[in-house]
Image: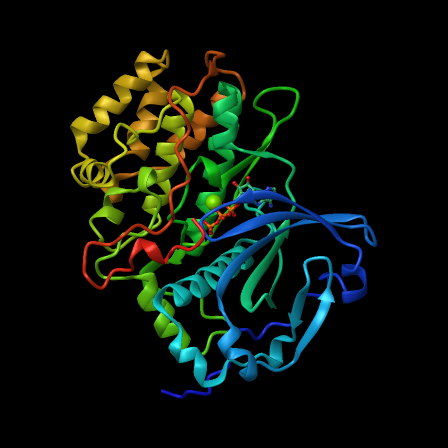
Length: 392
Ligand SMILES: Nc1ncnc2c1ncn2[C@@H]1O[C@H](COP(=O)(O)OP(=O)(O)OP(=O)(O)O)[C@@H](O)[C@H]1O
Ligand SMILES: [Mg+2]
């Protein structure tokens, strides 16, 4: 293997990326925290615009310092980060020493960037602005700039009580986004309330939802995001994309195929959106009956028609007796991926959004789940250990 492979970053900062001068004046505040990083709202008074910056720690680079060139100190106060000129960045032979989780994190930010680029322009997927890598405190970070969307995530909304028309809008808009994902062959793998943002309007059902967080997205049929990617990196990230015995996803929102470590298709997007619809309608996660990971995984693994009927009964008992809505949920939550359908759910969600069904405010039935890491411990000995998550 060529040990001089350049770091997989070939893209110049996009033109709308703030210039170093403008960056002296930026103001930022934390707006979210997740598995591997933090999300900030960045305000640039020079242009009057806001964007969101998703910062993820990739790896500790203290030991690689000498191999890094084109590194300028202190260009971006107040975070005291150093900007790395893309073309000059080399980790040289050191890159092959990256540990499994470092590679996974690197793969995650590149997958997220590529997915966002492919979907850019979709009104229901967060807009992409650019990506850069930088060093701060001897650590290499990725920063993905995305459109700032003044909103709440659906999980927070649910804990405050949510109007059923807004549930309809969230599901209908997300369905539009996931349809686009399917057309591009993108499997999000992490559709859950935290990853759907909603901007409310005065009239329930008239807001806008956007899908975020493509950190563990993959492409159908093993086609990975190739752009700007030397072959060796492609292979490495591809292996990490499709590990043999590792379950990748968030515990409470896994599809049966993820748990069975089968070949994934965009049908898992449909199943996961069905789970979100179920949760937003009933105030309780479909698989949140137990806190024991093994137990939840077993429930998903053995998920079948009986379990599906039980879920539908719960929805019915919460006052949703409309057969079209129940049938739409049935189609989305089908245990067999090939039989799942997104369209009926989208149609019925649109009906809810337009107030064609009962007007109800749904309250959270249980305390919202703690943030769970997006990568679950696998079953085989080669699987990454959870202790590798230094920021969970
Ligand atoms: N563009 C945005 N505008 C406003 N708020 C955002 C935006 N992006 C993210 N957020 C907030 O930050 C939270 C975390 O964002 P995101 O899900 O992308 O990161 P994450 O969960 O840390 O990702 P990962 O699982 O890849 O580590 C969201 O739930 C949301 O509350
Ligand atoms: Mg997230």
